[in-house]
Length: 466
Image 1 (tube, rainbow, N blue to C red):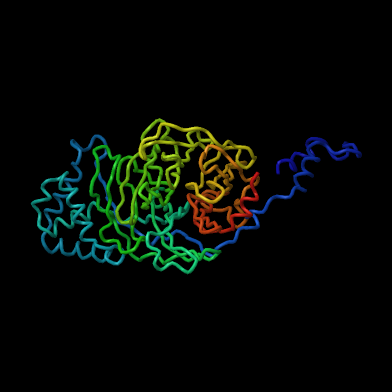
Image 2 (image 1 turned 90 degrees about the vertical axis):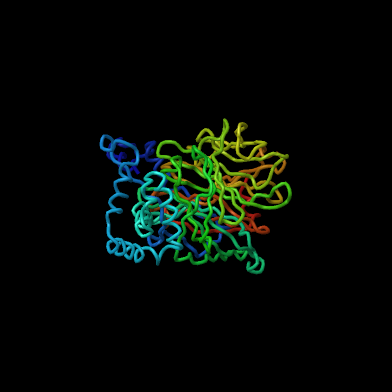
């Protein structure tokens, strides 16, 4: 510490009174003698599972091209120029180019032909002469405007977790789950990727191997300003094949930190909703995806006075006949939002403020609230000295979630010596947890680099609250 470096400059040892310590010496002694809480409070059990980035997993996504300012006369000039070059190729050259594309793509992507045809359709809207080309030339045009993107090459972290739609092969006393993670690839662009697995209801977690192939979505519908999308993964045969990457201008720089929840509707049926931050490079806005099967997704931008800032998390059912959500509108405190509409939010009240040193800088949620016998268990994160992210928890009243019944005195999970280093050091972070009976499973990201799991019984966790 700097205290040790400055000690002698304050008062040389020979001139210091023998019967007293300087203020800095006394502080240094107290700091050296302080006993820190463990990185993981003793009731947690680690799962021997880690999810790490994999540069071999790629997805085909649009490769958009344009001339720099001052070179193209009209939008689309560069696209049309490339199409004209392809039109000038003879059959042998086209065949060679297609064979090379096939060699590159067939081993890593499902239904490449359909992806090429969708891209050709998009390019034809910009360069109508594409429609006059032969089938081989058209497919080559599609390839010119696609790129293979390693969506989790740099990092795979900030997981969220929900029960899987199909529990038919769940382990006895356990659960099948789907885990979504934030993958980072070239250009620090974030995508959403999925894994499936099993939890035995105790400390055992098993992750299914990801499929060797990845699939690109078909856009079934899109509104003019890009605030609503309908996506369909026609060819995906496993949830790990589906990759949600930026598809609109609002998402251009990434889809960040999905918080999934299995939502119980008024008629008793369940669906899945998840909020995430769509980032265009300047502004972040909250969007929500909805699905029932993880093959078809509807995505909409949330509106309203309080639909601002990152980190919103939806309650798993209506509370008092209204939708409820946790937010952080002011970048510092935890807020409770209420609305009659799932898509429009105007009401919010502050319910939890920083109290402890480890959350003095700011607080936020670590995923949607979880309903337990005692109320709503809300996992939280706090930011303290040296931008250290730790995980805590609060308990909210079941009928009136604005009432805080308890909160963790100390961080329940903080970066340990073996988990400090990574893309962003000193961070543990989660976007959602599961409860089965009286057992809690928390997947969490480490140093914005990879992910792991811990679990615990609820009773000792609740005992840490005051």
